[in-house]
Length: 210
Image (cartoon, rainbow, N blue to C red):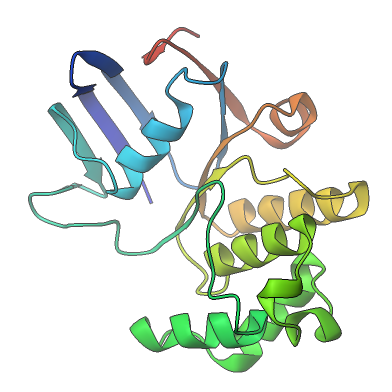
């Protein structure tokens, strides 16, 4: 999936959140967004996901303009920090409920995704109310992955993960890119940026600076 940004800007009140960004993300590559807190990384991910409408400019997904021809990318998995799940349901029950929206994934697809990212069977059968930070993060990542999307948008994906889980996630994302997915992730983790990403895009004050 190709994502093209053309002069994308966003103002909230008088604050410039994204400043005239033009860039193209190509399929089969992993892109890292680097920058300080408040630099615009998360807002850029939200704009690509269709969760934020630009004040000006266009976000074009495989030739179709967001908020014009399509409302959201047609095949997308996304994690935003502090994703909330119903706490009275288990991890498995949460994703089974989500799977009924598009009917693209089976229960076995969901379980396979849990295994790939290191959420065990006892854990996926535990209510989310009892999840640790790391388990919630794995559930969020599994939610982004389980329907095999062509576009993955991940905000701080290794937050809360131990080293083994981080290594497993990096291997999974590499495999997704090799199968042709376009992956854009925002991270403060230098190892994520240096060892995982094909291209690092540096953002400051809502602008691409390198």
